[in-house]
Length: 64
Image (cartoon, rainbow, N blue to C red; front, top):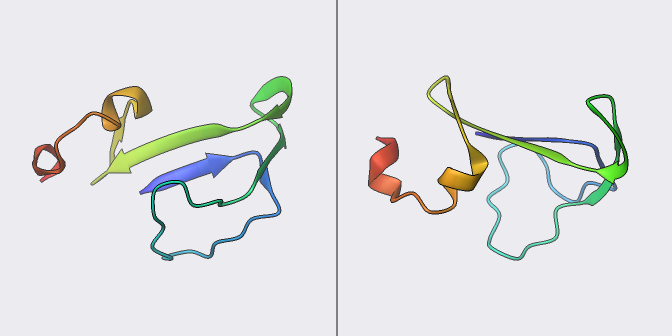
């Protein structure tokens, strides 16, 4: 599961499948960061939070 904080003009719905490079929305302000137009990204796997930087290079079989 991925969670995005600070998006506006969202172009996807819950449970949509997305592909690499697909435009999902625009960054906006959020309550977790004082920077303008910042987006926060969270990755969860079966209730465990995964560092997004590590998630990008993970083998999908590592998640099962």
